[in-house]
Image (cartoon, rainbow, N blue to C red):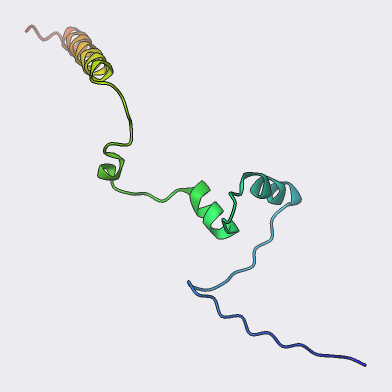
Length: 93
């Protein structure tokens, strides 16, 4: 006896696509997959979604002293770079 089972799959978010990947790629996906995460969401996480730079505001937690040190280093590098550029161009400041 042959039993036929019909299944209708309706994706919730867009179309479902089948892709062929090598066993090694599948093994890497499984290894890095987070608990409860679908493979689609994992692939999106790996590919990365471009967001707005403002989304990063506040994501780097540093002390005021460290922020001051970084700002000082940036100022120093800008000054040195400007001096080198002016020297190469023969501009006197």
